[in-house]
Amino acid sequence: MQAGSKNIGFVQQILSLNLVPRENDTKCGNDKSLCDFSEMWYGVFLWTVVSSLAFHLPAAFLALGTLRKHKLARFMPIAILLMSIVGPLCSGVLTSAAIAGVYKAAGKKMISLEALVYGVGQSFCVLVISFLRILATL
Picture (tube, rainbow, N blue to C red):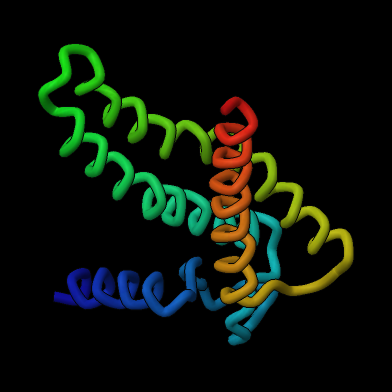
């Protein structure tokens, strides 16, 4: 029964922006900020992936609805969903590590809200650049 309550606690911890489960012997103590490089990297990367999926899922459903009768274009939603995962796995890993590295080198702690802002900000920048590149070709 304890394992079930521990899983509920883990889900609640993720949803309340406390991304990384803490052990009692960490350097941060009872502080809820992310102080280790891996915690900061994971926090920013997780929000990058989640926000990328939030941006790409509606686009994939829209493409699925509008292109379902086309012979070849009906497979476009698959490409959109693949890019929602491949993009953060390629670029999100590096930029999240760079952000976490700057925080670690500066000796600062990152609160969970900052990880959310950096993660969503990365996905938003990709979204803006994507639209600007399409407009430049018109």
